[in-house]
Image (cartoon, rainbow, N blue to C red):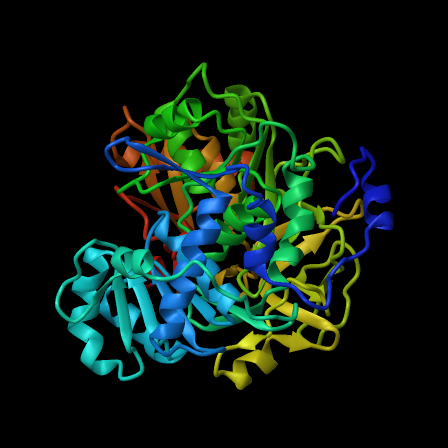
Length: 536
């Protein structure tokens, strides 16, 4: 959708949305590449290192077969089918089958416990689930509380009692299937928010959501697609980042994707995977990059062309490490489940400014606004708002009209994130509205302090919160994970505090330092500061 240029102003000026009236993600991401040539779609590497290659032709056949399975089992247009799987071949087959059937898919994270799983399945009213044996163990304990869940398909040749074999069902079904004619605005997928405050909300997206992601993916990946592009992300395909920052945009452009089901992120194994499969394009969340920096990984066989990252700001130290390690710039992005990838970077279009999220993606009008949706002057802190309409915005929160209404003010979708836009058009993330620390009359965002802490040679990871203080309203507390070779001590804590005083500001140094082995995080790698606040 983008025309390659080295001038950002030209890119913005010349961009036009191209959203056809009739559009289906399965057709766009699979069928138009399934021309009988065996064009490669997926390189899947299992836990034992075995590699399986799947073509677009095979994906089309498998997803058509599973679409017939769902139809035979009574699912009709608009019904929900959940994919309770990690990165795998079966996961996209389930989604593509749902899309071509006019069903609504529901991605679910495999680490969800029974309560989290039950809430999402009950709230979505899912009539079918595709899962593995581990997922079935959880489902079997709550199934009697899910009256709408009629069919569970387990990805094995033989299914446990009460479930059906996914692959046996697929192999027995016909490949002949007439896709449902969908409009770009028809419902396609419900992606639940990570639930950092209250119950998670289901963002219902239309088929057009894929088209809404393309301008940013193309810009940030230096005008993807290019010859020999191969995409990989360790981000789970249960979230909007894994699905729509990587998997489906890559397939829209016919770019092969590497999939790998890892029990945990191992920096050296990640480097080896990228080298073994000639990965050229990656989405690496900041947490993954911090772990790689901590392990000081190197591999001469890794030849990356582009890197997308987002979720937490990197800061100068991590940006420099990426450049020194991979020879490319890490291009940060900003968005959220409800309206994703609205801001991004490309060093060839404009200089990277450490700490900044970048500039608006072509096709998106992003402003700093107040709670009423009124624009604020440049340099003033406010809510990051996205002018409507655009193809990336959700249809609604599933079964939650009150929350849907609160998400908008005037012409803007309110992200709930606080930020600032400078005179050159760069956006700077401050914090979630509820993360701001009020101390001694100052309002402080935790991100800037965390970036400064990361510059200290002893600090691997950090999170900053405000804790109650009878005099200052709140005091700043830092939770710190140390790098190998450093041990917790009062002396080190004071050294780190003094470092922040000098590097940042006296009123922004952490009055309390707590060393810890791990930080509580969402499944997408964002620090759960609310949990740290409860610990005091």
